Length: 279
Image (cartoon, rainbow, N blue to C red; front, side):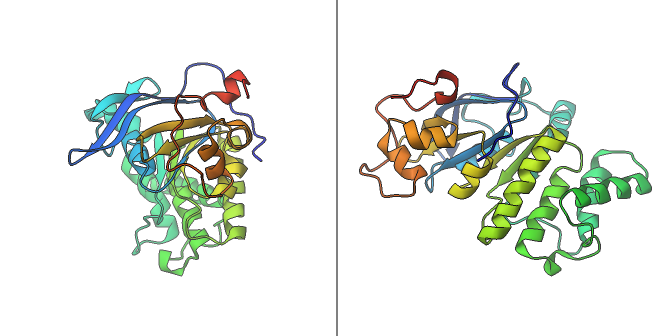
């Protein structure tokens, strides 16, 4: 269980207000609202096709909302452009599910890329920073390896090192544990928690791996493909044990639900952490 406390004070770092997402006229997410606090590890979960990655893509500015807005530290990322967007994106780090490393570049060269792109630092300083990030993720002995020479876990760590190269406020991770064996996955979970505490960074993670969700998440939002919106939001253990929606509890205990989808008749699984109002 994640015992690292997030900072509950002040304005949320990310605010999703009445957000709507569409692809080719098909509604994917409908009127989603949530807040993510500074310094917390926040997980986006739900069944297949519920819109987890869609929400992440909009949060990092790859897609524009069909309705509503997503605010990053008060800035509307869907409306930002030019220098404002560039400044906003510099405060975000992203590691994709497959790592997305450039195969012709070494691990060190991959981590150097954002520093070369977004800073005017001399090469020696860039090397020093890139090496320090690789040391943080335990890859100091793999600097000159190519991605093809890395294991799955090493690839994930290299992608994470590149994501934190610019010391971002927020790191977005898409299915970081996908394809990893249980031990490597647990090691990655521990690394994420260590980096969150050491760097005071907010992590937003798409995941369907229940052991990882319970290990790292301060809070989890659960999306539902049928209703296309939020059906539960709170600390994962509290949702598992106390959410009045039986299907949410079934999802978090990996057992077949007795209903066909996750949606409760009303928004009764949200905010358990804040209210302590359990049935």
